[in-house]
Each structure stands twice: as C-alpha cells, then as structure tokens.
Image (cartoon, rainbow, N blue to C red; front, side, top):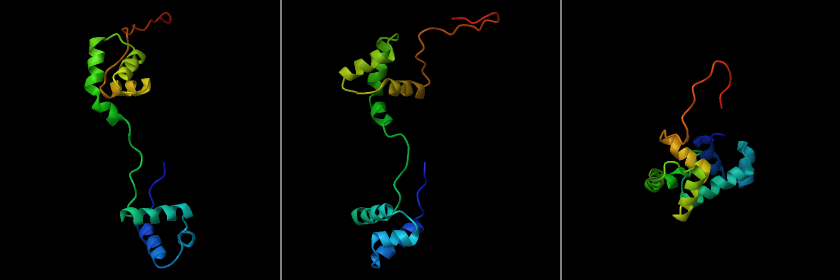
Length: 128
C-alpha cells in the first residue's frame, strides 16, 4: 500500500493553483499526476482541508460487532451449528455476513469452531 504525500507538497501545489496555474500545469511542475492535483483541489474546495484521508484499516467488522450479542446468542443456543447454518440464521434476523466474516468474528474472541477434539499424533503412521 502506498503512503500519503507530504503536507508541504500539497500546500505548495495548491498555492500554485491559487496563484493562477491550472491543475495540470501545477501537477507537472511538482511531479504528481494531474488526477492527484485535481482531487486535492476539489478536496480543498469541498472541505477546506488538504490533509490526507485515512488509509486501510478494517471497514466492515464494526457492523458485525454491533450485533455480537445476537451472534453469540445463536451460537450458545446450538453449539454444534456450522458457520454456514449460523450465517443463514443471521440472514433471517437481518444481518448479512459471510462465512469468512463469521470465522474472523470468532477468531477475534479466541473461540474455536472445531467440532471434534484433536487427536494425539501417532509415531507409527498418520491418523484420520
């Protein structure tokens, strides 16, 4: 993932645009893409800020965490429920989530969804 360009560059580029240069000419002068200069200029006009926006991070688990009580209640009611069955039950309650999302939900809590106990390793051969 890339990193945000410096505030100094942003301020100098936007000052050049305010001084009369076009976005494309200012972009060429400071060595950035024209689309970058256009986006920065639009951001400055729209919000008044030239700071970079946050990058990356988890954008979806908040919605799932808000319904954690519902998910855990369904799981407590039927401990042997598979993730797919749990997903379908949650869809009926109005929460659309993927099986992978449920797996990450339980992993964040350190809860395993394994249905049988692990077998001790065999020194003579593989076990099933």
